[in-house]
Image (cartoon, rainbow, N blue to C red; front, side):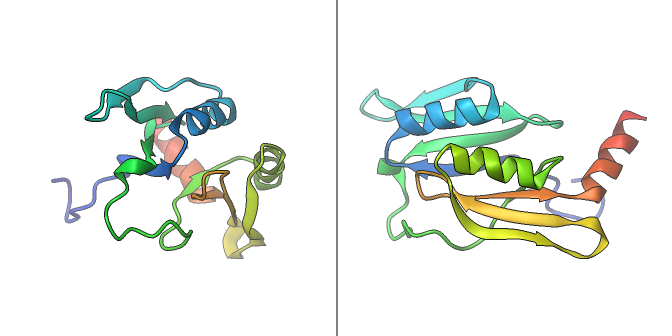
Amino acid sequence: MSGNTILRGMATVTYFADDLEAATRWYAELLGVEPYFEFPGPDGKPGYREFRIGDYQHELGLIDGRYRPGGASTEPGGAVLFWHVDDVTAALEKLMSMGAKEYEPRVDRPSGFITASVLDPFGNVLGVMYNPHYLEILAAAKA
């Protein structure tokens, strides 16, 4: 464990999709990359696919909705993971042009932060954010 924290960094975010094939195509188009990893379900059909994306090669996983935990809601809500983007307005336009629906509109927050979120076509909340601290940490890591 590093420092005094138990949480060391975002490892994988996963989204459920009742149509894993359609979700894989949608995210591959959005991200501009194909999944690098696939894991079959017990029936041998794909059950999970994973993309590596962004500056830190974070993992975005898609899980076939058949494997949603019992009692898990199929309605959007709860925590929102925000992905840093350089232009929130452009990201929203791209997402909406691909069939995403507005969940929370663009909000200009103090100190240069800008947030928004959409529902992907599979019912998952996808947050986008311009985060000046993200850019500072990225620049320091490259120095």
